[in-house]
Amino acid sequence: MKRKFLTTALLLCCFLASFATIADFSGMWTGTLKTDTGEVYPLLYNFKVDGDKLTGTAKTPKGEIPIDDGKITGTNFKFTVMLGDMEIEHTGKFYGDSVGVDIALNGAKTHTTLMRKK
Figure 1 (cartoon, rainbow, N blue to C red):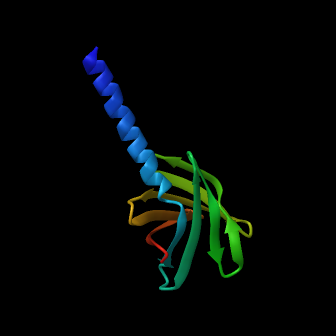
Figure 2: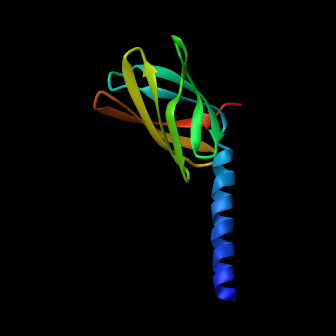
Figure 3: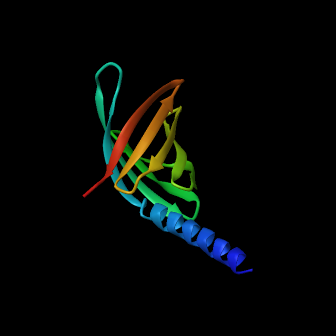
């Protein structure tokens, strides 16, 4: 009985610690996107976490674009943004002080790292 209670308590603590960590994901994150052709684009995201939902905006030269279909699982996340008629898929992992993001568009995929904006 004690072992079952201890195991349950330990699992609950791990879950709560994970949830508290991803809650720190909210805020502004910045980085750059380098293309195969050598072009460099600035990236700026404003993330908002509500449970397992991820919302916010992505800033582009054309203005701010809402984050759609945002989902968080543990420290992993995924969302899309629509730029004109292009759906840009994002998947990534939150590391506390940085965010690794894979960005996919029309079958091409690239990776970048975001840092919290100061």
